[in-house]
Image (cartoon, rainbow, N blue to C red):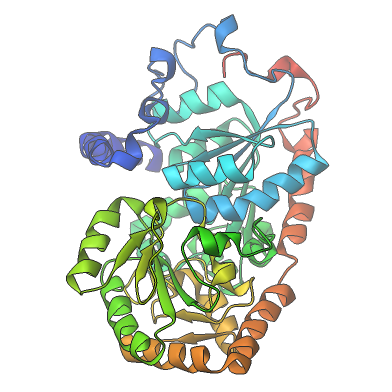
Length: 464
């Protein structure tokens, strides 16, 4: 019943969904692939069952996969954060099992870029299908995965139902359920829908005991749910220069102190600029760098900063050297994690406004003091760890930012102590990656993949 109702609702909403996606420039790339229109073919499938296609496309030489003899492991990571988290897992799986072909799907452009940068030569990128029955059937017919891994509770019913019907093991990796998501999904009929979806999952590897309890409450079978920790703690340090070349490339002198605000949103950017106006009066060598979460907002952020009377530089346009108080906008992709290395103090965005927070571990792994606001539902355990270890401070707004920044800019000993506590917290919580790999391993034998001979090309579709 839920499959029928879900697909009816999705079909009725499809004009709105497609219109919204087409209205967003960052969602247009790969749009035919998302809809199952790849190579001009519209994957016709059972409307309500998301099952086998009625008229499968005939393979041809042009459509053959690059490595047709290798069965596919499909990893889904919706956006940048999930792609970053998934990268070490995919690399480790590839090292253990080079006999597989690894496909990583994302929804966003930032996710695509993370896959291409971090998994070059290891995995191929594709755009994830929208959860329409025909799009899902097209993707699965093309890939014929022997294992599907998805990161951080990205539940799409048609994908999970179809994989279950085809006896493909499904593993949720680094799963989490925010308080908001749990409340929304733990309601009457919605809970019944999620129970149907969750019963399609072979293994749920959750970040915390709280997440484990929540997903069981929503309907996952307790015997397939494990609390394994957060694999983001196992991220390797970003590759980067060991000298001062990056600082020079963004126009920073040796004596200037960088305050880096990463993944910022509207509403908190104004507070950060106001805080900087006070900080720079006491510490004129301080320079603020701001990295908006959505790079297409750069023009608006630039205008807002200029309206407040500050000199603005964009990372992509730094030319003539400027000295003195200024704000640098990090308007390039893929540099933020590395940029934290040269910061004196870091602020992580999405926390002063009710977004839920972004990756607090990126500055912590470099041993930097971390500031974040009250809204940390997406990273609650990491925020709590940083507070308990003394590696970070929760701020309520502008006044707190000014206070802590001025304290750490003035006292290197205090600043180093907080940063070292942040880094120790990261190191002490590593190990989730290995625990996850050990639990995934049994899913890679032929008995748990529908009896498929994994090293044989006979079951691999020839028109990916």
